[in-house]
Length: 402
Image 1 (cartoon, rainbow, N blue to C red):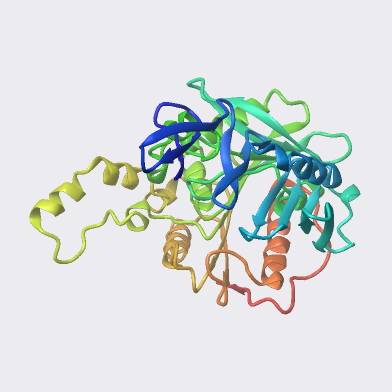
Image 2: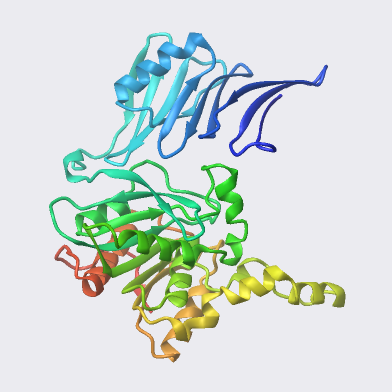
């Protein structure tokens, strides 16, 4: 049995356990990088991929060293995953992406030592159009280091700032191509991809520091600390800051706007929850026993979720808000956005609401993603004075303004 465990360490250790003798043997451990994947062949681990801010491969079986070196040389980096490899086959499906290189899929033939392109991006996506992304470590007020990524537009100037917040909350940003980052940078915004405490993939310490992230935790404070860090960057104008995210990143946007209303000039919430009690099943259902009702109503989790649910604090939000949602979202039902927008309008707040009746939790249809991109750039151009591409919204999108 092959087991990964971090019981007494910050990052995962990889073990083999002999079930007949119960003997445990450590196979691999990197104290500064988390294990992302284990490449297995015929029941044995041949290589391990790890990541801190970028990807690295560690070959365990010397007979595979030449293969991994060849792939890295051909691709130009170790930023690749082996996404498919039949146990008895010598052909691998390899996925590669960097911040300036959109996703490409290759087929590697171990026997022939050849890497062939299987699926590549459109030739219109030229790498010269993209900006570099670099890791930055931002110290929060309590000393916790937040591993983030910074992307600056080309040219010189002082650029408005967009905090791009990931979903989950048990997720993270990776050192990969991100179309939203490149769009925003192209339109003249400095972009910080924020891996707040509670993000996975950076070790147990950062994750456990945000163990209450599902109840809001310290996300708003972490975002505030990122803005504070940016004040010392001569390329960033922190008088013009927006916060933007999908799913739990949308919730983080709403939370940030309600906790620090003077800090932000705009916010964009796509498919985000507004009521943590409802999304966390912390409400009292019909038929619940009196004992369970008491435990739910007075539980620390419920109280924290109530205290961090933006739906309860719309009067505190000052910044203009763009909201997007969909009909078939099973992760975050559309009522979260319907009720939030209604409450904001009743309170006289500035909010735009676009609805996609044929989407689920995110964009699957390209025309809808492009429509939202157009609305996003127009919204930010209006409130942060960035650039926008001329033209109307995508005509074949299902978007409906509510």
